[in-house]
Image (tube, rainbow, N blue to C red; front, side):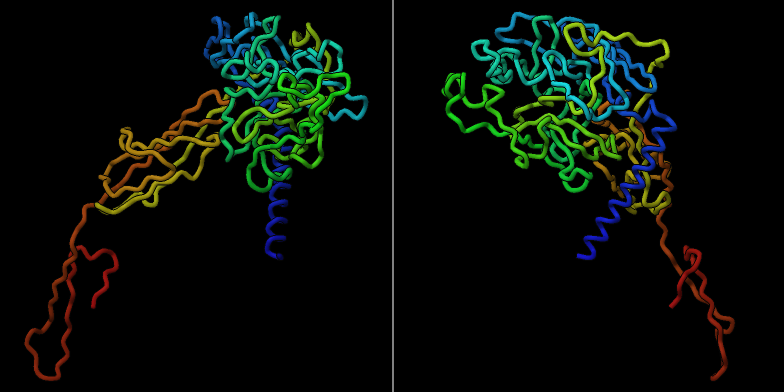
Length: 449
């Protein structure tokens, strides 16, 4: 028990130190270290997506208080078709304004309305759980978009609205690796209140301790079979097809009623309120899918409503052109060895490697093997060992990088030998005699027996 307490205190202490470093970095270089600035998938190559429209995020500008995200609402991944949906995605020419200093709303909360309620990191709109319709248009039992419209979603779980705005009501399946349950998910979007939206996996403990787990919603479908002023539960109107079928049950999951929590994340080591997308063990969306009900923070004007997300970048804003690239260094167990002796090469340092980096070892610039280490006894003097990394980290401007070079010195194997001599090969009984050992390949400190 004492050991476990000491361990936990040490972990907390380390986190405290990390928090201080994070704050210091934020003050000295806010643009480069604020996730709301760098966490976007920028189009740096002129790539196009659906209907040859420029994809992902075209430009990032920031002031001391806000980030301006210029995007088309078209992702870089392939989208469509949308069975039964006559709408077609168009270039929305959006400019989202995201605060860099989100604050908890301690006053009257702002409801999560219709239309875009946030933006994914590729510039595609986040829509809420509703399809904007209710049973018999009575405004009582609102329809669950995933149930009523899911059959018209494309393979990436998105579809276009009547105005051509491509969007996701549920987790954007093609934006990140939702099957990676061993690493903390990346930031995959921002809500209009400035708080981040993460993928489905996070630390089991809000302090960043424990294993990685899939975040579970705290909503449970009602067991009622009747609905006041609504249709009875049936095959036509099954439990869960309306928003009001779902009951928030504190303690039944990991997240609060908004589908979020205050916690430590890799990008926010000092902690932040964060929303999460929710999926089940089969990677299928689970209610409420993204953030729900009301915003945790204060929502700035200019993003909501039919004409929202068409903000003007102020002249005081600076365009963000930062680069995020991986880096790798390698080391050897020895750089001078004898012929036939094994040497092991390791990777002591990786930056921006992502959750599952790929390593390619090379000898004299020829691919030889993969993995995090390389051991061989087949080296010659002058061989040059390097390693390249392919990162799967998000937000990078380049995913590959090469390591430093290690030049090996391999000495030819030699056989030791020794001859002896004496100063007096013929002596009388009792006379002292000195024998001298004369080594060949004896090294610097040979041992004689």
